[in-house]
Image (cartoon, rainbow, N blue to C red):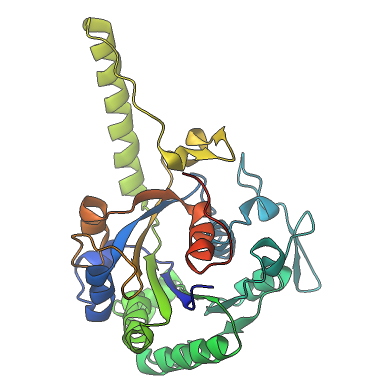
Length: 315
């Protein structure tokens, strides 16, 4: 074993807030480490709970056990407060050579997801707690999980306020509180930097305007490319397939192109290469991140390899 564990701090909410807010300890991880993006399947779930399960199952490389890859429809059932996948799932210990995984979340439904994978889950009721208390709870639970020999710890936070609550309670600041909480947790994790691999993430949820702009840009690009091909005698340029469009030797470009991306910064003392990213935000990571784009389901394999649980995959 490489002798260190991994903590993943994940804010599932929109990335837009990251562009305007200063988060010194998240920024420091980006500065000392390297960053990139994880590309998700291009079908979204409208229901919040299904959306959380979709993203977490992709991060944990178990998406096909819970959803149809072709149309993203759920294939699991819920009976007697249990989430039952369509097929029996290998435990993480079986799949990743005795690697122990745990989950800390403020989303009750994800405890059902964790139970189905046979991983321990700690649910935080954050309705009546401020950022300081929540971050202290998370930090203590991380220490507890580390002492219980959990090698890979996911900390997942989601904005659980409805639009009505946000308006009636004037919760403008609360929308971004999860990233503030994770910034405080990152401060505590800096004390563990010799033995903990810290990863911070922010999930992407494009709003309808962004999507329509993206679609119109794609359509205009397609038209301009068609015109170029019709009116030009230049030789066609062939570009190699990017690795994120291939999975299990199959072309999955139609399943991921146009999908949302999660921005990620990785840091472990003395082992992580350093790129030019200075702030944890989408614009800078997209421009300067050395890791570029990785297919989301390769993430956990990469972490398992770095921690010494599985052999190197790919090239």
